[in-house]
Image (tube, rainbow, N blue to C red; front, side):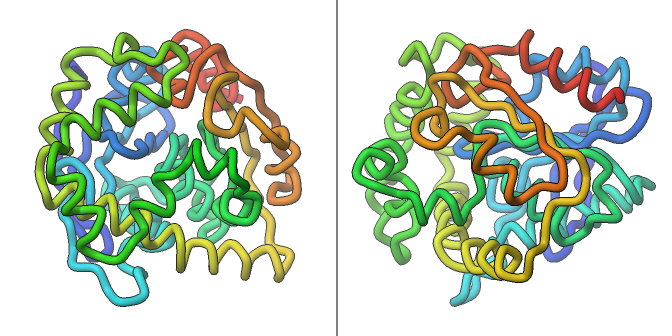
Amino acid sequence: MFEGFRESVLNGEGAEILCRIGGNGPPLLLLHGYPQTGAMWAGIAPALAERFTLVIPDLRGYGRSSKPENDPHNHIYSKRQMGRDMVAVMAALGHESFAVAGHDRGGRVAYRMALDHPETISRLAVLDIVPVADVWERMDAGAAMKTYHWPFLAQPFPLPERLIAADPIYYLEHTIKSWTKAGSLSAFAPAALDEYRQSFGQPENVHGACNDYRAGATIDWQLDREDRAAGHKIAPPVLALWGNAGIPSSGTAPLDLWRPWCVTVEGAALPSGHFVVEEAPKETQAALLEFFSR
């Protein structure tokens, strides 16, 4: 994966961040989601690298980035703190302003960065998500069955960690299969899938991911509510992409949920489940190239 890219460990803001870096052109930060690593971008990275300088990190708590000890209020794993990692990493590479695309948890880091650092983010793409506050506040029985992992992973330490530890690779594969349109692992490149298995098989990475979701149930939701109450909006142009069989595809239309949060937003459904980058690579690649090239 990532032929021609270099790997570098850079200092975030309280965490060491493993990054894959390659390409030429304006800077574009690509953020992964749960339960993956930066390897999720491998299939479309070569085409994007022809137009952009790509920075593809593992978020704190995931992959080969560090897993700092959490605090009682989950600030250490908040999307605000993860966003500060990314701003620090990009500044260290000489990028004071940049575009960002994020899938799943990475999308939440990305839109939090756009709210917290509007002068830094030039364009934003969010993939198969809606805002944290909308997820929690609109959760009904159907949504709870579909996104049971939100309350499960957010339970106090060590309950979810110990249960997942019984068979972490089974849990990983069941999770990602169940979120695809085909209900299988066929969309995932073998090398990427091997990296997900290797990462998720490490107890410290399971713990990091649980801390991420603990933050989602507490401080991340709080920050969303505070921004909404203050009338803050995401200033840079936003592209929302989602799978037509993905997690946000049922219920209120994703664009209708994003519009109150954004100055400008556009988007479309793609023929996939949750993992749009890997299930619909051509369509995702085309949409990102068009949006970020404007």
